[in-house]
Image (cartoon, rainbow over all chains, first blue to last red; front, side, top):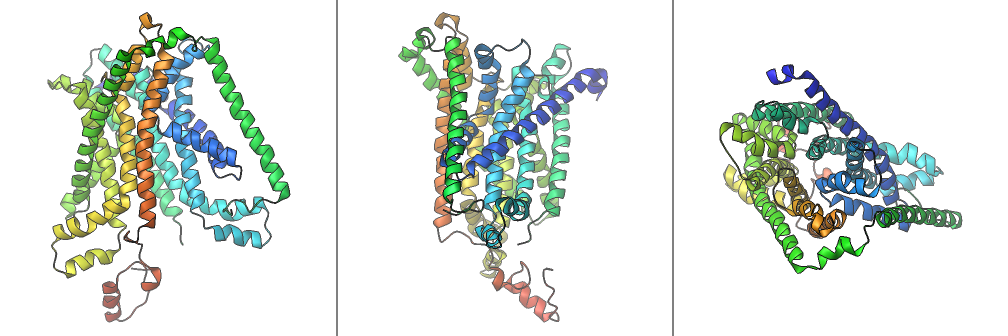
Length: 216
Length: 304
């Protein structure tokens, strides 16, 4: 514990770095994931295939490679200010997580029986009403628990950015070893922090799951 | 084709869909054009950047690096499956003193990022005098993480089976281990096969984390080659080729998962969910039903 109290700034910076990556990446993933997810269930064949290619390619690429590309290749291609790797890492995490968000949305929508929408259309509801009153409320119930799992994975994935010298909890080991501190204890403390953060998210997930369990 | 989201399109919807399709093509072409322009403007298409890939020696090195990735993946996959079974059986134990610790172990191991575990093994353990090669740090971290995830998958598979399966096993005189080994696990593995293979895809992708702890795998070689000034630092070509190899390997595995899932859906032997009509008192079994009726016939809908 002394390690935390002796270097409060270092740990605070690391935690802020992790949270920035988590919330920034999560925001990009949600926005992009919604767009791609909508493309994958749209009636437009070309949009469906574009969405499918994006999801299949990015999902089968290691996150390490995506962040590698962001760290080493993107600065060669596009002029970026020096030392601005954090936004690129956030973008990389967002691009990667968006595929999972899109797939979760798609499978959530697929759990709604077609008859539900057909019945709604038979009642004379328009597209907006079918979506807003019938399909989406049912899909949301089966989407939210797996969506929380996606975000738990995102939280754990933020550490990968540490391999490319972004300040976060995964990178604190290198800082502490420069100060001559015991690395083993540092890493164990990082593990404890992650277990606590993940258990908090898992607890929220459980509450949602119990609240929105589908009664079919 | 009818879907939950939209009806068969009429004439107006068809026109609108065509316009949206054209817009999609335009946006995608715009993004591609931007990427190609940046590649061209920074000289990524020059022969100098790609010349190195005309040497067969480089491709041999690529093959070796891919082999290193696959070796780590194969060891990790086998280890994770074994650990997954052990943890799942402990998690499903009838004795609370076995079940509770296993539950906690699985929950905690699943919560630790793989990279942090690798760092612990590679940089942390030397503090107490244990020096692991980077290969073992990669494999052990992957085994521990994916093993605990697979344990949860197998548990979910066992728990999703109809309870009559277990009871039938006991009824024909099998012991606990027999019921687990001969009846529950084979069916759970069957129904969870697609999920298990998808988790193996994750394992394959996570071997790339070895790059960070200097395990000489595919990505590590791409970086090595890409920063070689003698060859004109072909970093982007090297990263693209490494990416293509990763995507190809993972797509093959993902396709296996997809085929398994489709076959499972078609198969008649797959364990089906309990027929709700057959069990008027929630998700109980026939035995429970009879016991309930004997106790005074309190039919309490939904409570069991």
